[in-house]
Image (cartoon, rainbow, N blue to C red; front, side, top):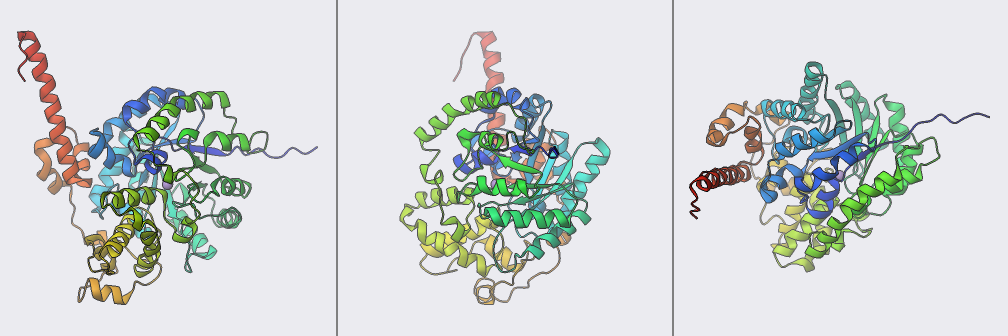
Length: 475
Ligand SMILES: [Mn+2]
C-alpha cells in the first residue's frame, strides 16, 4: 500500500483586509479586530493578511485611526502567525508613483512595526515598478532576519496574456530576488481548468512557492482553488465565512473541509473556526442592517467574466453612482470599462489602474462624450508615468487627452528626486512618530486632517484630566 505524499495546503486568512475591503468598503475598525486576534492566532494559518490596500486610507479617512497603531496592536496579539500586507509597488499604498527613498522607508517601517510578508504588485505588471520594494524587503531580511518579498502578478485576460507571458514573468520574478509568487486574481477571472494549466505551467517554470489569490465574484473561486491545489499551488487565500463569497474570497471553513482526509488536509480545527465565525457573524448582520454591506456585491455576478471588474472596484463604483444619483447607469459603466481599458493598453484592473479606468469610465458615461473630461491619472497613464503596458495605448485617445505632450519609456521613479526630507518639512508640526511622515506621504490631505483630529483628541483628554482636579468642566 503506497501512501500519498502529504502536502497540506497553506491558508492566508483575509478577513482583516481584503474580505472587508471587498464587502464593506474597508470599514472594520481595529477595536473590533483585537478581541478575536488571539483565537485566530491559534488556527495555524500560513499568514493573516491585515494591512495595506485600502485599510490604510480608510483608517485615516473614515475610522480616524492610526493604521500604524493598528499594525502594532495586531502584532502584539498574533504571536505565532505571520502578518501579511499588500503593497502597490512604486505606488506603495497610495495612488501615485513615489521616489525610491519613500518606498525604502515604507518597507522598513512596515516590517519594523510587525509585517512579515509583503505582497508587492504593480497594476501594469511592470516589474521595474516592483524591484525597489523587493530590494528593500531583502535588505530588511538581512538586517532583521524578518521580511518576505512576495511578488504578485495581477491576473487578467486578453490577447497578450498567454501561458508564455505568465511563465516568462515567473522566471523574471525568481531572478529579481523574490521569495514567492502570487497570482492575484482580483476579479475572479481564473476559471478552474485554466487554473490547472496556469499553476502547472508556473510550477514547472519556477522553484518559488506559488500562492493563489482570487475572489468569489464570478462564482467559480472554490472550484478554481480545488483545481489549483491539485495542480500543486502552495497557498490559497480565504476569508472566514461571515465575510466570504460575493466579491470577497471563498470561505476558509469550506476550503478546510474540502481538503479534509486528503494529502492536502490543513489539519485546522473546525470547532475553533466555528468560534471565530460566531464572533464575526453579528457584525455581518449589523453591516447588512446599516447598509454597509450591500446585497448587490454578495451574489454571483457572471457579468464580471465579461467586464473583468474586481470586487473592490465594483463596490466603489456602486457608491460613486449612488452619490451622483445615477445608479441606473450601472450597466452602461460596466460596458464602458473594457473600452477604456483597451484605450489604455489593456492593463490588468487592480488599484490604482482599476480606479483610473473605473473613474474615467464613469466620466465618459456621465458626461455623454468619451474623454470630454480626463482625470489627471488618466493623463499620467497615457504619458507612461505608471509604466509600460503590455499592449500599445490608443493614439486617438492620446491625441485627444494629452495633445503634443512628451511620453516617457524609462522607469518613472528614475526621474524622481528623493522626497522624504521635503515631505517631512511639509508636515513636521504634526509629527509624533517617524511613521507619520509616511502617512502624510501617501495621503497628504487625509493624513493632515487625521493629525489635527488626533491633536484635538489629545488636548481634550489632557484638559479633562486637568479640569477634573479643579472640579471644573468648561466646555
Ligand atoms: Mn483581492
